[in-house]
Image 1 (cartoon, rainbow over the protein chains, first blue to last red):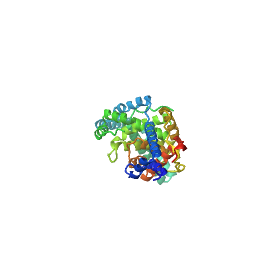
Image 2 (image 1 turned 180 degrees about the horizontal axis):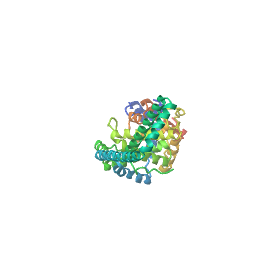
Image 3 (image 1 turned 180 degrees about the vertical axis):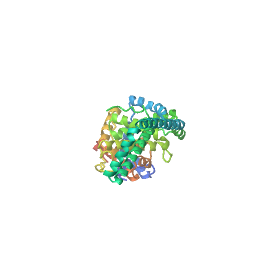
Image 4 (image 1 turned 90 degrees about the horizontal axis):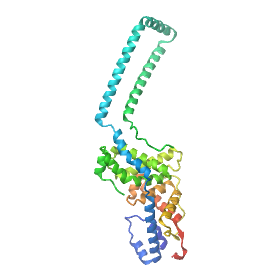
Length: 170
Length: 188
């Protein structure tokens, strides 16, 4: 083995490779043996240099993470209870709104219903029936989408960890 | 490198904040070192380290033990870092396998430098590392932890084994050449 080959292999060697000829050259060539000693010292310096201790301020921030995570973590039971509570709130809010709307509707029925009848009749005369039913369908879809968004927002508000974001502001 | 015990990981998965805290303490130097090698800036590395541990708390339940825990964790860190680089538009740095060129041919005259004091050497090593492509830098960082096998480094970097071996070999040669001084009198 030449000295160049010895040094090449020193830089690309794998643990499970056969080192017998490489070791033989190291034993026979004092220059390469000295080179390898310096190489190993450099390797040690590299290993020590590449493992960097995090700054103290970061260590302090990291130390807070488990506790904050524990506080924001939702236990399965709490999640179920929370979900039941949300549904109940939504139900009663819906019930209340229906009642209020009903009262308002009843109060205005004498005025509103004839006006609505006239308007619908006029619309049917002016526009095609298909267009009116399309508009009705669109309104129903929009209402459902809005309700879905509200429910999804409530669900996300339960899942999102609060207070754990403490990144440095740029 | 302290590989957390499976019991410690299991407790952390169950929401034990003490276990999570122990894992963070065990791994913070390694995670910060990887983050530093990806981001090349102390404050960015600190942010990435924190982001990685926050993410770890949220996804540790999905760790199934197919690889070593540290391999899984380091992959999380590397992916978060590369995503951040891509998000910032540093797409060339945000990849580990494109655009790499061979370092100059290995020169057997170069000699590892050992005469500098440790502090000075550390500064030189970091400066030399920062000149290397991200792929070499991250691969070398993982390699010099001296606890990961080549196949584990390949798993962390999501690269083929031979690519990782090439990255490490080329990275070591490039780094050595930057840290070396010719000493012709010892030329064989």
